[in-house]
Amino acid sequence: MQTKRANKYGFCFGVKRAIRLAEQNRGAITLGELIHNQKEIDRLKMDYNVNVETNLDEIKDGSSVIIRTHGIQKNDFKRLKDSNINIVDATCPFVTKPQQICEKMSKEGYEIIIFGDENHPEVKGVVSYCTMPYQVVLQKEQIKINHNTKVALISQTTKNIDNFLQIVNFLIASCAEVRVFNTICNATFENQQSAKILAKEVDVLVVVGGKQSSNTKQLLNISLEYCKDSYCIEDESELKEEWFREKKLCGITAGASTPDWIIKKVEDRIKTF
Image (cartoon, rainbow, N blue to C red; front, side, top):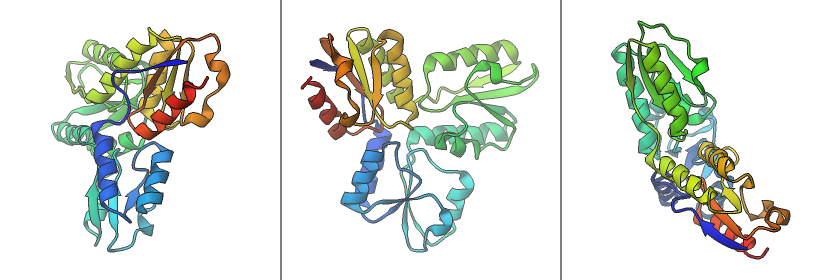
């Protein structure tokens, strides 16, 4: 098999920053999974004794706590600040931005519409900054709004820009006043565009990333639009030889939480077929 990587793929700025902070704080605790990649979390635990804790009540005074890239809820952050705990804030700056927008627009009387998955930790953190009514939606049909309402629209950072624009158009046609904030991460957009270009060129495409990763799922959905033989895996052990039969060129891309060492193992394995 021949392989070709996407022009843009893998670790984004926010993830690189979070990994660096974790490595610099040996023995620290991350409140929730630092990133959505279990293999990298396992590496940090083994090499740097960085452990995951999901229950604030279990964190002892004097501990060093790393805030995950997706951020946490406002009340939880305040509780940490009010405790005798060393906070290492690894929240991605692109995630901090929608938090700040929700807080500001709520104070100005805007109802908040968030394009995203309500169960995603990033969105759970963002909505905690809303003091006005808010809605979390994945498609325009879910929006319930009247014409006179002032609306501020943001997006989960890893969502697809085309789907976001559908909601923008719907709100502009439905509301008297709409403030639109494009909070989709630029790295996410570049990875998605690169995946689209690559999918048009290859016979088979492999997306490497965590199964819980939102941006990895987006890359797979985009790839499937242009290359029906597209697959998502977490590591090389999930590759199946039959995917590559009668194929010549395999494209490889990866989610924003996927480290290079996993991508290389996947590529080396594909080349053996």
